[in-house]
Each structure stands twice: as structure tokens, then as C-alpha cells.
Image 1 (spheres, rainbow, N blue to C red):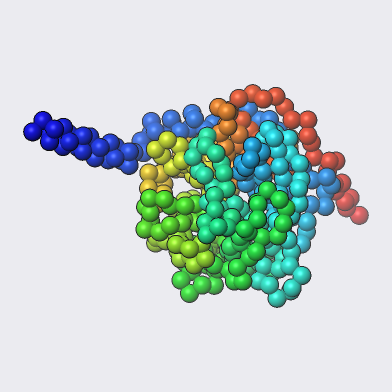
Image 2 (cartoon, helix red, strand yellow):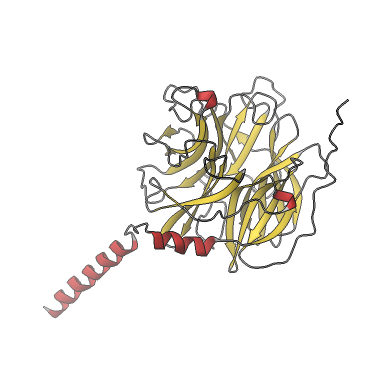
Length: 374
């Protein structure tokens, strides 16, 4: 009988342990403050990637680790549109360009001929974890937004998927699905994404909190009355195979009703999900563009942080915009990568950190001279 009771007690303990493990954490003000204290980066190291001349701009870093080295995918805009590039580093501070992973198309009939802005998918999202780029179906995946119009985020932009079976640490062209997976012209397009679509970030929903294998967070512009004049909001879509996607929910996840809320990037900090994202041109904010965060216990409902910006304009190299987060924690230090834009509209990639690591010696090249009025 004692053995029987012992078995029952052990089983009950195991059940309690599992219940505790997966128990949703209430998102209180103290939890929000706790997260802020963990992720804040008050020290600006400075620029770590800059254009070598003023004919192009850098944007949107995504960082991963493989075989003891760090790698970054990032965007280059050269006047025609976006292409996606790759760089490597030994220490997260000093970066070397490697080459392209998604280039302009030679075929003018491609829906994404002039725009291919890519972001890594299915990364290990554990805070302070491996930051490895995980596979699905024996492939490394990238989601991206693309379009056929020339210019800075011009025309109607849609979301596509690309993949490779080769190592993502070597510059080579990813293979793209023939057609976009989400577009503003879809029959099931919502009022918040019926104008154009932008950055997208795909994670694996291991516990199927949404009932699906994968979640895509994306920002898009839209409106119920005038889509072209609408705000930019963060929403979500779901998939089971990385190829077929459908919108999820009946409202955006992050919505400030004016300006931009965009570029979501997800991390799992202990028992809580954290979404890093940027805001711009909100009512009541004096800053042009700045980095914020929100917190969730189910990947669907998000509580917005009400305190100080994580990163905002404060230096000559980011005095116009300081936005578009990618945040990792390594060896006890938080590295907050962001897009730095100065008033001369030069764009590069900068870092703020949780520990004072000194100052970068990298600077933008001399800004272009403004033409004098005749």
C-alpha cells in the first residue's frame, strides 16, 4: 500500500510540476518593469556597419550564430530597391561583409523583381540562448517583403518565402517560392493590411498556442476608409508548412492608430514572451522613430510597455531615427542592434548595450552636399 501511495504522490507531483511549467504568467506592472530592467541598454556603442559611400543605405539587421561565429543578414537600398546581404563577426561589434543572399531579378515578370527584403525565420528565441537558425523540412527559411516597383519601399509590397538547403553562413541566392504568400490584394485581406505590407518575422509555435506550427508577425499599412492613408500596425498570420499562410485574429496585435508600429522581433525571456518593435510618428511622441517592447503569455495578446523608449535618437549618427530592433543577450551583455539614421538621411547599423563597451570608431562618410538654390 505504501508503494501505491508513493506512486500516486509522485504522479501528482509530476502533474503539478508540468502545470507550473506551462502556467501563464500574469502580465502585471511589476513584470513589465522586471522585463525592462533585463533588456534595457543605456550605453550606445555606436555604428558597427556603414555604407562606404552615399549611393546606398543599410537597414534591418537580423543576427544569428553558427559554429562559434555571429552572422547578420541586412538590407541594402541603392535607389532601385532592397536586396538582402550577409555579414559575419567574431564578437558582435566588428563586422565583415560577405555577399548577397537575395538579389534583384533579371526576369522583369517576377513579382519581386525590384524588392527583396529578407529576415531569418525559425531562430532559437531563448533569451541568452544559442540564437541558432533552425531548419524545417531540411531547409533554412527566410520570410521577406517584395515588389516590382522601383524606389524606397515603393508600390504595392507583398510577403514571400525563400529557403536554402545550403549553409546560411555562405553568401548564395536563396530559392524563392514562385508567388507571394500574403498580399494586400488577397480576398481575405483585412482593413489593417489592405494597402501594403512590410517586415515579417516567423517563429515556431512549439506548444501550438495558435493551433498551428508557425506564426508570422508582420506590419502592414491599411485602413477601413482610405487604405493608402492608413496607419501601420503589427498583425499575425499562421501556417503549418511555411508555404501556405492565413491571417489570424480579427484585429491587429499592436495598434497606435497613427504613424508606424512595426518590425516585430520575438524573444522568450524565462516564462514570458517579449516583442521588440519600433514606433514612429505617434500622437504625443516628440521622437521621430524609436524602439519599444510589448509582453505576452500566449503569443497573441500583448501588453504594451508604457515607460521609457529602449532606444531613441540621442547621437549625431542617429539624430533623425533610432529604430528597428534586433536584440540578443550573450555572455551576460545585451546587444541591441538598430538602424541609425542621421539628419543627412544616411543609414547604418548601430548597437546599444547593457554594459559600457566603449565607443565605436566607425562613422558615416562625409554626408552629401545639399544643392544650393539658384
